[in-house]
Length: 240
Image (cartoon, rainbow, N blue to C red; front, side, top):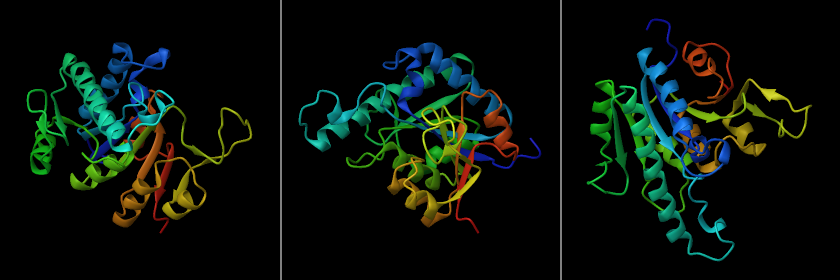
């Protein structure tokens, strides 16, 4: 489609985006809602890769209020992201969106191992690629995995999908006077400790000049408008 601002995107989803109203588990209706948004983007001619978290299934050492080895908890979370990736793949393919899941931790009976050049080839063929298993290493979040994969596939932008219409100076649900930012620099985001993504992910994007766009995926028009270059959500860049 002519007039596109971004031609290849990495969409970062939270695990909770699959949970629906119950707040945990996998809700097929929520998965289908996301799948329909992704299909709209593919129909525009945009290459789409996705990284999804696991907060709907596993919260690491927070789950039971007892001490758990950090690496073990993180590996369990990586496995949970693969479950979410498979659920989203199923929803996408049910509406005829060809999808591939690649995992950082090999499990060949259920998904392809992550191979950068193969992932790029899938995108070139019009397939959606979902990256599961985080980075494959403990101590790194799925935010960091999203930043890493976005750069590896040469994405034009990393889109952080949320349920609010951008980044605010404080929680807009608790404070009616919260102010939304149209644009931020990476440094300002880090200095203000704004919860855009974790600091490792933001720093990685800053060092490689990868823009981060925070928007409300549940607004039916936000993602489409952003791809066409409209002023939607909050854009985090170098500020040059």
